[in-house]
Amino acid sequence: MSASALIHLARSGGTQAMRQRGFLQTALVSVLPLQDDLQRPLHLGVLRASNTRFDPDSSGKPTTWDSFGIWDNRIDEPINLSPSIKYGKPIPKVSLSKVGCASLIGHRRENEDRFQVSQMTDNILYFAVFDGHGGPEAADFCDKYMEKYIKDLVAEEDNLEVVLTKAFLELDKGLARHLHFFPHVVSAGSTATVALLRDGIELVVGSVGDSRAMLCRKAKALKLTSDHTPERKDEKERIKKSGGWVTWNSLGQPHVNGRLAMTRAIGDFDLKSTGVIAEPETKRISLHHVHDSFLALTTDGINFIMNSQEICDVINQCHDPKEAAQRISEQALQYGSEDNSTIIVVPFGAWGKQKNSETSYSFSRSFVSSGRWA
Image 1: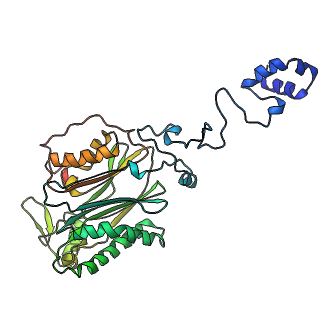
Image 2: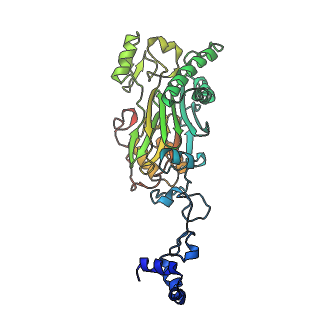
Image 3: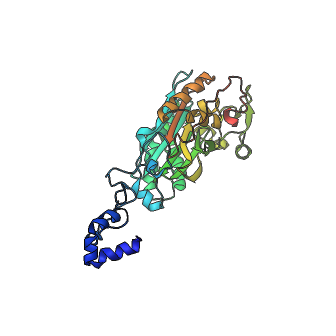
């Protein structure tokens, strides 16, 4: 019997329909409800009705990204409902408890690296690494005040690239005032690489120096920062136009005025007149959680010995971000790094989905293909 005929019989109320009531009740279970049930939600088989696509089984439990069949990973995160509605697509919640961090002293006398992970505002996450040189004073100042400068500016400015640029420059001025009371500290400086994640989808990065930010997309390393070294033609030209010069040490590394291996930094005020600046280069990118596995922030104790794709491959072999951070920092030391090694690993929607096959690395691989030239 067709569905239209069943509807007619159900609505007719005639004696024939009444006599066939037993038949109708059986037949309509998988097609339509009876007349007195027409206003009720339709149940087909074992499926249960839902008032929202974020609770498809009416269980009352938050829908996870994997419920949509596209987050095939080992981290079970709920959907971040507000930005999902705002952007018109499901966005997983990035939990700070899942972020992996590690910082090892290496063969140095002290660890001058600093890092921060925090929920800066209701919808913005803050991640930062700082690599101090000439003493820990500059890195300590960045670690203590960078977030505050950014948070104050976010209250007035919506463009996060503008916010980061202003924050870096204001922080540099603040450090100058701070060090005025410590005249014996003449060459303290620090790299700064900061990432802001708004609504779980808008990623903005700002950086000075040679610490890095890298996004793993489809198992490939996507560099979000470019090292500020005298090796870069544009950076070298600015140094020369400002009256500075570039020399190379015995390892072939270029230095500004024979002292600093980078052309942008927070601090290093004795070199500010020769072209060393605190203005960051910034980059904005929209995350695609189906393809993006993680964000990694690293200092040069790792970057100098492992290239970006190596870091990406090793992290993709790890079970969780905490294990990944520890393994990368330890592996840099095993490969011969003598510097402080710091890393932050922030998992995104495709974490674990693009796991690579086991890859072994050789200690004899070329420094030119890894290191700061990668």
